[in-house]
Image (cartoon, rainbow, N blue to C red; front, side):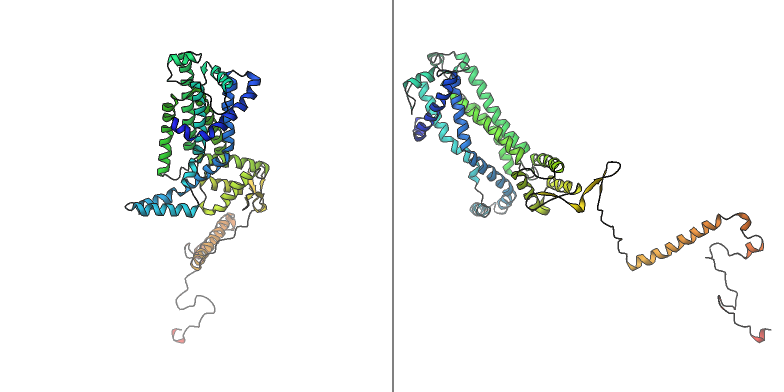
Amino acid sequence: MDTIASLFSFITTPVSWVIVQFHKVYGAIFGPDTGWAWGLSIVSLVILIRICLIPLFVKQIKSTRAMQTLQPEMKKIQERYKNDKQRQSEEMMKLYKETGTNPLSSCLPILAQSPFFFALYHVLNGIATGSTIGVINESLLASARKAHIFGAPLAAKFTDGSAKVESLGASLTDVRVVTAIMIVLMSASQFFTQRQLMTKNVDTSVKTPFMQQQKMLMYVFPVMFAVFGINFPVGVLVYWLTTNVWTMGQQMYVIRNNPTPGSKAQAAYLERLYKHVTHHGKTRSRGERAIVKAIVAKGRDRNDAERKFINGLTKVGFAAQADGTVIKSEAQAAVQAEDGAPTSAAAKRQQPKRQSKSQRQSTAPKAAGETTSTTSLSKSDEPEDTKPSGAAKQAAPKPGTGGRSKAQSGQRKGGPQRPKSPSKK
């Protein structure tokens, strides 16, 4: 560990200086020798580091989403060149270069935090061993050794023996209980953070090995924190617990306001955005406009939640624009009917479908038949005294003859009759 600490010795002095500056502020409030003054100094150091790492965190989010988008293409490359590892690597690097994706970007926040973690560990280890380090002099060292967080010294570990713990002015039971609670909270926060990412902010429409890897890390990381946590001083446990809580809150904010496309978080976000837009008639922030702009640009490649969002706006008379804004659409504006149901105010005129020649010919006799039947029904309703009787009934045409009588032999069906031949007289 001394070799690793020496590698990060260049940052030990800045870290110790920042802790001392925060200690001056909190010491004036809670007292210089209290655990609150030293504990809050470590918490403030974490917050300051994480604020400085926000740009890297944003880059990590973009890189993670880009990797999720590339998973189907990566899987195709792996299947195509499964027997040629060199060609597979070349195609992967070509894909990364074309899309501008860097797989290592997702690890940048952890890598950037590592020097501060080892520097803080080295500072707290110096306090535990009674040696000055950085800008921490003898008086600050004595004050830090007196500081207790819930009865546990700042530099005590779970694995320390009773003699070492008593030299720091504490009992072994207090140290074990406090460190155990911190280790459990640290592992639980790490598990919840990873689980939140897997269950809410992952595109469930694509099943890739990347998802299986993330699911495995969801269980591996908490176990690693629990194993290594028993060798961390209380001050380092405060550092990691604070950074895990910060990461969890930061991720909750990102998932709520900028979710991954195709995830459950995106469906919930678009539902909230739909309610806001239909109530206020516009998008309220640059982030919302960016999301609407991306959805409009996708066109037919939208997922189910995005199509539902666009169709919902259209039904209530709004239209999403290419720049991310939402405007009122006059062609599909909705008004309230008497029963409260929305109806279209400018309904388009329905044009009859064009029929083929055969369809028109087939429907013409049918229409004529309907007219004849209607007429016959209307005639049947006449009173009985107007109906023909006796010989008139016999002279009437029989049903089913179509209203036509058969022509007599030797006579034409209609028009003037031809005179009979003289031979027949």
